[in-house]
Image (cartoon, rainbow, N blue to C red; front, side):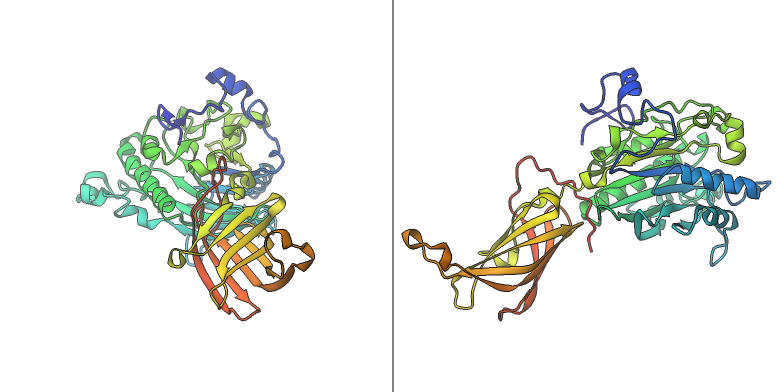
Length: 453
């Protein structure tokens, strides 16, 4: 990943030279005010701390909740990572959120644990999994309780990582329906207050280690977005801890966040970090802040109905991030040296598969078929074996015979790993192979967002 300048700010030659030029000209939304639609083929991921949605005092009125729902709809985001959404009881009672969702319509669903979570549009994305990350409180992610065995005496009941208000980070994996590409979002509400900056350091480190673990295991997807209320400006924890090893890069904001919103004058607290796989998918390589002035509102009027935080979003072209052509190359099963597969990914999801193997008598047998790649799954309904012709001057195309041998399905679990399942109709049975890639094609970097089934 490209090196970072300062605390988590990613330097990249694709960005415009100079901060002023960048703010004026870079990105397709940077020179515009909101509302603005996502560019064609882009999906919007938004993060917003909706200040004390479930337990404001006094509570929001019904009219305010309806206005909040309409504002959320107007953002045109497919996934909204939310913070300070309070749920109580089992099953959870969340009347304020339920009122918002009812107004937004049946297509909108929420998955909330504690006070963080997600609201998402089921017509654009499918929720594949979600969990509260309780493990981040313990090794190997955090050594806080070892480092401070008397933490309650020293810091009080809220003075531990992820402890303010049951404030665990929550993660969810979604699949964009139009591209079948999967991506992960981690919604965070890092510890508040200058006193607890060292707590945010533990929290940032824990989140980064978790992301590193996901990437090293090639689990699910390498398109990962770490978003939320960081309760700190760049340069202060958790920013330096997230940026260690270039695991995550902070997405610079294309427009000013210095709006006076609101937090007693504190600004620039909400951010988006991404993995390298996700970086190239972001429109304009920048995030965008939605400000009160974009709606001709004062910060005070904005907070009265909505929040003391400004939403921040990125627009991403997930199909572009999943460079499925990079699956092209030669593959083999380590336990079956001496045979192998050649895979060619063509345009529009068309693929050609060659299988170099042997028949029951030990003679070479080449199988070939064309199929379709949808998301991470390549399906060849008819795999052919050819025969009849002879080598050299005696070759006559009219002599070639084509017999359907069977079918196969290849599911890619990462850039270099896949599972192949076959079913023969000509006496070779059924079976599976675990494939590893041997060769790649030049200039086809694998930035797959595929889901490991």
